[in-house]
Length: 233
Image 1 (cartoon, rainbow, N blue to C red):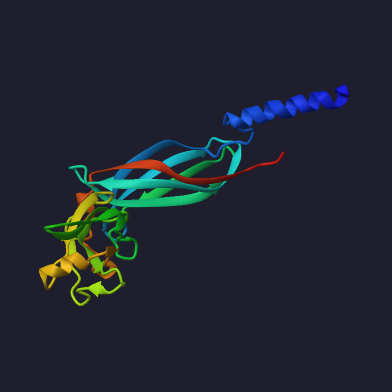
Image 2: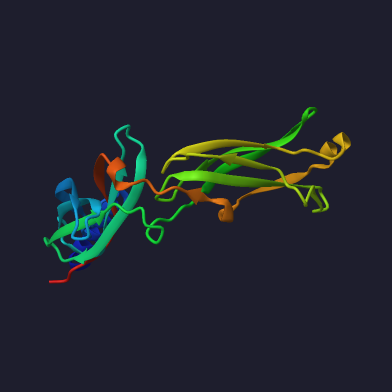
């Protein structure tokens, strides 16, 4: 084989080997929070505010087209009251001074409940669904409801007028709710007709109570989503 082609071939084989071992020549997006501070103060309107101020730096050689910092606010017992974020774009090495403000304004909070998993159970005693749901919003849910729909094999819904539900109150941000919903047939014989089920969050029933700023005791920050690209010389 021609030696001129042999050396580049060896290089390509070595490069492929590095790639297989998860080695990459491309820079990774990286953001470092250098410092942060939690403070309460009274603004010009006399309102008490709580906020996180901090400094972060793009520590990679990639341009961060999107850089996110998440702030979490807690009460004195450690319950998560609110989760907010701020974002920007940063050149390599650029410093970012950020601020995340606690808010109980309905326009700023987003109540949400996500069903993580569930199972249909059927035995001689009846039929029911059991599962887990997470408060994946940014505010404590003072009320949440999940509905279960039970069906026959021919897709006919059983008890369509009054499908059974499960409810909970005081579900903290990020908290997991283990729920169980029992099928209540008009006739006990109907249990034998249950073939499958569906569960859903009643979005219109999600409710929350804004926690006043004075209840906020401390806060934490963390790096969120990052999207970067290589900066060509």
